[in-house]
Image 1: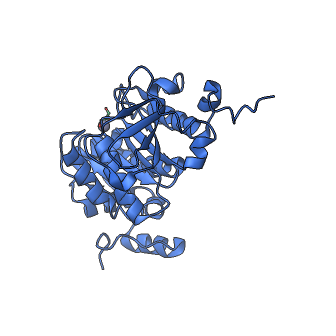
Image 2: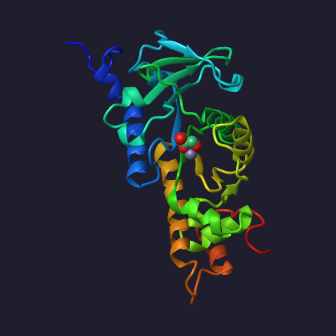
Image 3: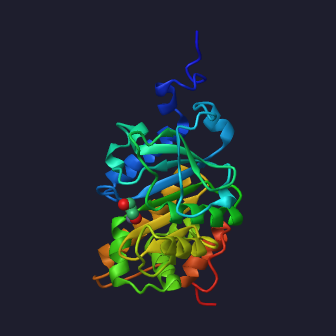
Length: 281
Ligand code: 2HA
Ligand code: ZN
């Protein structure tokens, strides 16, 4: 009998690939959270060649796509990406239409579509920000694999009423829930408002990604990076939760809060180093 998993041309087998399931689940969860209305949000995920080859014929390039800029640093890497204009709401029902598996060509000048993006689809419009962020994060952390962008509601709301200085923004988030400092001791960074989908916003985002896993786009959303889908989603959930608490209390009289001393005690207890400059020396 033919092996289910090893039959690389088996459509059902491909959909059952763990990396496709993870992408379907995370996009569904983001949509359920109300973060990804319409075609909002995009995800890209680096996968090992050996993992892709278990499910997909890596020698069968379906078509090639020219990226808007060469990505030599990512040559030969495999990605699962969300498609441009696709709705997260629909990924579960038809992952082959809404997601794609790509390989960056040997010279880094083409994207080779190996699966998905059916009916002429193209990768997310935010590919410049994703690719530049992957390059920055891989230099900071060789285990880096995931870049996730979403329109997290309370993070967006907070960028209307809070100072956008990233250290002050970070401190406020740390003060909102006790576990925040433990989950993102490296803080969050914030870029100015820039037109989405451009290489300019990609450059600004990746510059921040050199030293931070979270980049906030004012009045737009959030970028998160991490080593697994779970960890990256959890990071964004935690930032969004803190922003939600902020939006619930910002207009109310505060009777007590987490003090700087308590934040320091927390860091000590959990063995994390708060981003320098956020807490008073
Ligand atoms: O439409 O979220 O930033 C997808 C986006 C663009
Ligand atoms: Zn967006």
